[in-house]
Image 1 (cartoon, rainbow, N blue to C red):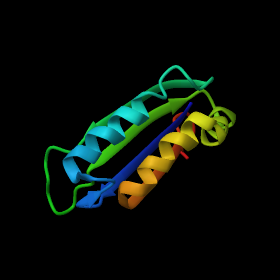
Image 2 (tube, helix red, strand yellow; image 1 turned 45 degrees about the horizontal axis):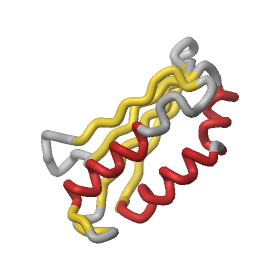
Image 3 (cartoon, rainbow, N blue to C red; image 1 turned 90 degrees about the vertical axis):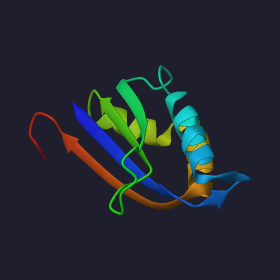
Length: 104
């Protein structure tokens, strides 16, 4: 199983909304991917509540059957559509993918 974790820092204002509004919209558009991607076992989106200097604003946690399923997710039209909005409101992005079995 592959775990895919992404964290975003959002712009203070973008697309006519403030950071909090865009965080909610990011959560909504990403969670809409649930059930649309074969091989995707789980997708959760959280909005940061700690608001520390080191915090990201939004995190995505997802699990895939294997690397091929993650690759298919990356190329899926629904993922690209969600990514268009996220790309407009994000300031920064961090990503980690790892294989649960091998730890790599």
